Image (cartoon, rainbow, N blue to C red; front, side):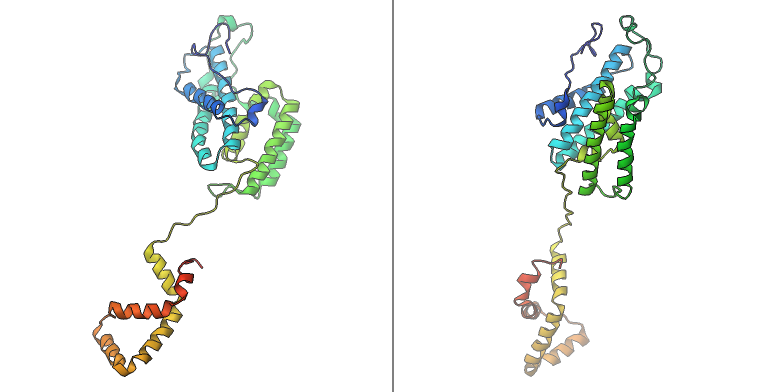
Length: 291
């Protein structure tokens, strides 16, 4: 997009446009949107003219919408988390560049733009527009707030029920915005949804599944201790049998001497007791130490 013959920093910047972006899983398009967001953040906006700044803010919103939808609908969970870093930084940049009143205050007006925009708006934020104050939009917000009161995000990943309710809310918002908001208002929808749900907006989709909780793998020492505790009764019973069987060989006397002197069982004797105790139990019990 060009305004009065000026490009944004003199460079043409492609956009992720059209309603198809909400279901488009084109990796090349998403990469294009991400590249634009990253490029905007390294460009100095302090010396931009009014039309350039307005165009820059529009690019940020459009490409952030693109990346939000692609991340939520098209990527596996681990890749979503990687993309979320770009989304978070782009949102912060959008605020600092386009919404913070101190940042946009006192911008000069380009002479060729004077007939279109007399003054730069105090800030470009969805809160300043009429779109998100409409009754239809507020109804979606109210219903969602009522449903989500009992669902707090207490872990790293939302539950499937949380995502299901969020997706219903997102659809409600898209329908309402398409009915009562103009094109400029709809352009703010991605920022609005992100501000409402900074995690669910990029993590949730209709086929979202909460990751299973994976416990840390027990160390061999823990495995052995767990296994031993599970067959402790069998171990004691076998020990008793072993003592009776060896009583005629003076085992009890030797055992008594060991107790008085603090001597430990030999490796061979210890192995004998364990073999007796575990027997057929070990393959079954040690394979499932958590039970």
